[in-house]
Amino acid sequence: MRLPLPWEINMNNKKVIQVDRLTKMFGDFTAVSAITFDVEKGEIFGFLGANGAGKTTAIKMLIGISNPTSGKAKVAGFDVFTNAENIKKNIGYMSQKFALYDDLTVRENITFFGGIYGLTRKRIKEKSNALIEELGLKDVANKLVGALPSGWKQKLSFMVSLIHDPKIVFLDEPTGGVDPITRRQFWELIYKAAHNGTTVFVTTHYMDEAEYCDRVSIMVNGKIEALDTPKKLKEQFKVDNMNDVFLKLARG
Amino acid sequence: MGITIRNISKSYKNVKALQDISFNVKKGELFGLIGPDGAGKTTLFRVLTTLLFADQGSATVAEFDVVKDYKSIRNNVGYMPGRFSLYQDLTIEENLEFFATIFGTTIEENYDLIKDIYIQIEPFKNRRAGKLSGGMKQKLALCCALIHKPKVLFLDEPTTGVDPVSRKEFWEMLKRLQLKGITILVSTPYMDEAALCDRIALIQNGKILEIDTPKEIVKHYPKQIYNVKANNMYRLINSLKAYEHNHSVYPFGEYVHYTDSRTDFNTEDLKTYLETKNLSNIYIDKTVATIEDTFMELAK
Image (tube, each protein chain N blue to C red):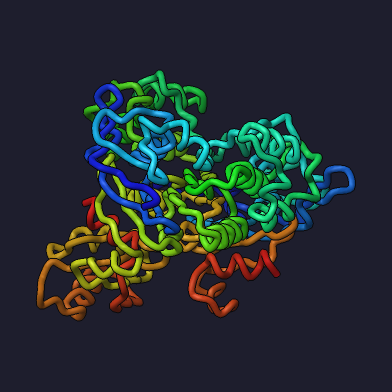
């Protein structure tokens, strides 16, 4: 492991997402209202909220594809106002809709996304082999992705979102519809990525997914109304699962 | 009987979507079909709603045969498919009017059945369906599936992609419909919704794993489950998986659900082992099986 260079060290080295009063207005409508939070390196952070609470708008600002109206935010060390392009290079994104190419093979998909992120041929080859090995996809590496069962696709899609070693990976409802065993395998991959220092930012409607997160924030009408570990939130609201925490907050 | 299913099988090319499925749904029952994507849930719905022929077996819905009496079935069932299938560029009111007319009825005639649900979306009745939120679309789809007063209601993953508040409201609506005597077959990939059904069938890879009430199904779990927690989740999972006596190891929110293969399992042994793996703050305690645990044990 190399030592950090002097300019890489700063006081908030552990914080990979810093959000300060971030706001987005559409005309008179405040979609995101002065949200403030930090996410640390290697943390699994759950970002929850009802339909229309402002989650998607907030995430679009964090991944550098929507300009905030006011406030400040730094993602992977880069300012969302002035340095959005560098944010995109340093994050991974996995959509709830399967986003790999069904008519490319497993290997071709990995090569394609590796290429998009500017990895060298050599690095792509190393990454492909490691990834195929880890997911146990050796026998199907040259098969079309479209022919794989949905659970395998989802695991592959997650690993591909990590291909360029991003500092943060954004997951949008990662395990919807997957069978319970595959879901666990998926969360084991997430724990592993987090253990290796990747920050995992998860949005979901399913509160059992929220229970896996280190900390969880809940948005209601554009504001973050709760932010803590699942355990503390359950204590605070005197309920025994995250679903009830959510219902209490969102129903008022 | 609300629905009878006898030895139904259906294949697509070389995929066996349904393999010898048999079960009954009683009249007035709220029955859940619980399984992941690709389990065969939608195929079964399509067979029962006369949209697809089974390769083998027979089925009746509201006493009508799905092949011989398909026309009667179509008049007597409501079907809410998994994908939103209303007309995006008709308004709420126009969609409802359209479905009422198709079934030769009017909104007024069966208004009492949909009233509870419709009043929640009525303020937006001039909004086009394509512009509605997920929760509102789902309520409109349910109204349209009910407008001809069906005897049996088929709901294919009605809550997928819907937030917890709307999901809860949706299940409360189903309970009220059930009180009105409607037989309901609902599918979901979410095990927590299973507990809200009278009886459930767990389904995977086209096969039924188990059918019973949610309370009984968890009693069938063969082992004592332990909640295990420690200071590092990733190392904890790896250590438990490497432990020679484990029977199953599954992450479960803030805990890992662990079962041991021995009959004389002692939690102190496990604790000592985990300590040798440099884990600290170790917590081990008994917990009860959930439907998800049962599903995983059966699917193993």
